[in-house]
Image (cartoon, rainbow, N blue to C red; front, side, top):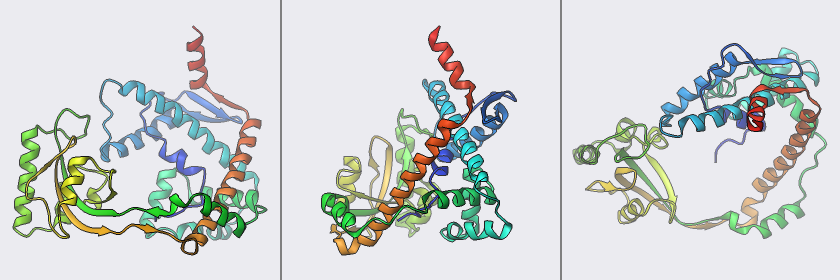
Amino acid sequence: MRKKLKFWLLAPAALAILMFSGCGGDIVATVNGEKITGKELEQRVDEVKTSMEKQGVDFSGDNANVYMESLRKKTLEDMIDSKLILQEARKSGKLTPEQVQEKIKPLKEQFSSGEEYENFLDQVKMSEEEVAYILNLQEQVTKDVPPVSEEDVKKYYDENQKQFEQPEQLQVRHILFFSGDQDTPVKHTDTEAKQMAEEVIAQLNQGKDFAELAKEKSEDSATKDNGGLYTFSEGQAVKEFSDAAYALGPGEYTQSPVKTEYGYHVIKMEKRIPAVQYSYDQIKQRLADQLSEQAKQGKFNDFMQEVRNKATIVNKLAEKEESNSKK
């Protein structure tokens, strides 16, 4: 499982900042009198646009302007929310440097390295102190939320047992070369992509490591960094890919490129993971924690909605859109 960071409002705000802006230094919004400039918006979205392009997102195409303008409006809303939560967090009391470190410690320990933690801070565009103030606010707002009772946990399990089923899964590695007319960051002709896949198979036949080749050559940004590792259940992968993978035995790889709508794949079977039905005893503690966190998150979200309702917010992009719609 991935880390369950108890930092509820920042992740959506950070991950939604995906587009490019060109507003210059004009004021695009104010939050209780605090300004957000076009330059700040432009800097934020330009950074994330670059990051997204590295992950394979293509910002060209016929609908690029419409898509980016929509994301631009969402970005500003998220910046307003971030500004608002920081303002409210500052009202919750002054933290000493020692208290900042105390508040941040449990969050920091959830990261595998200092670099990963620093990347998180860079992603949410906040300092360690600002994060600590928000965590402190969350604690104060949710301190009276009682733990979910065992009766409620059992009831949820009984009513949602399908959530705790895991069908048989296939764990494979794959290397992909894009081809065709799809809107992809890398474009090859069908012949080029097939040839590149054949060259990879030749290297594997010579003893090259599959995971290392995937990191070096695969064009699938979602899996290449972990050596092409991909785990799926029946029906989750396109038919050609699934059929080829299920035909392999553990440790075997396809001797010919596998053509799908995405391009050409080379696939290696790692293992079959048997189906599992998690019992209540196996899942109850994790489920209790999850439901308790959801209750706290719900209360905090309600609190922040009240804060937003009372705030004085001017969003010039939204005002401009509304004005244009009336013309």
